[in-house]
Amino acid sequence: MSVALDISNLTKRYGAMAAVKDLSFQVRQDEILGIAGPNGAGKTTLFDVISGLSAPSEGRISLFGEDITACRADEICHLGLARTFQLNAVFDSMTVEENLLTTAYFGRHHRSFPGLRFDRQSRIDCDETLELVGLADLRRRPALELTVLQRKLLMLAGAIATSPRILMLDEPVGGLTHDEIGHCANVLRRVRQERGMTIVLIEHVMSFVTALADRVLVLHHGAKLYEGSVDGMTRSEEVVSAYLGASGVRALKQATEGQDHVATA
View 1 (tube, rainbow, N blue to C red):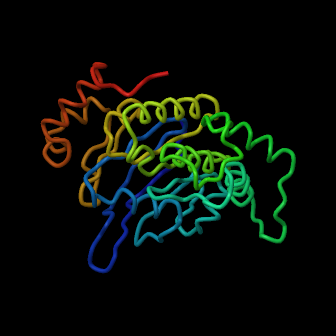
View 2: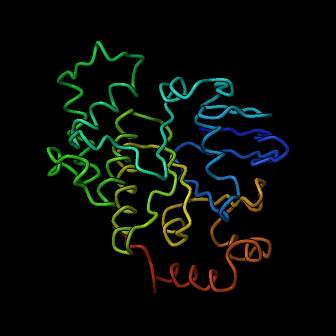
């Protein structure tokens, strides 16, 4: 299986503090990689550096074999990497459909406001994406009127609308109920199956991570604490001590056994 994303000796410093420390890992094409760790572990900083929002202090980032270390965020997006954010990132004054069309317009090509036109194919792609995430019936609704779940699905749809090869999701189910988390898990399964996207996700809801991820990367103080299978993570003394705790391990085992699982398709 080919390598979609290659992170080599990546470091990000803010003054004397290193938020990410000499981090190396690979994401294989078509896999889902879950990234976990305590608050302040460097997860979102890592996403910021990979997506071009923040320049690395050291190291190299490669996207499908192309060095993107010095690329701007818009250039990286046009090369096929899209991300979502923890906080709201939709245009409240626009409808669901207008949000998606605008995101697709600027995310796919180097364009400017004076040329803003939505062609027939863009609208077809928008319709297909809204169907994929379950927002088709809300296309005319102003984003301001959406629920928390619907806003998160709209942010996901916006990232998908840029036609990425890699989708990076920062806490996609934070603040959602158990049933809503299950719904999001099913949506991402459809995205993977129907669009063939490689997915990297940051999440504290570990039942969500274990339900979806092929592998897990755990960060602590900006460094790699663990990389491997979900089962191996629950057996790692370092991960249990620094992040999961005994109660967290029990909860994960229950989720794996189906006693408190994220809904499956």
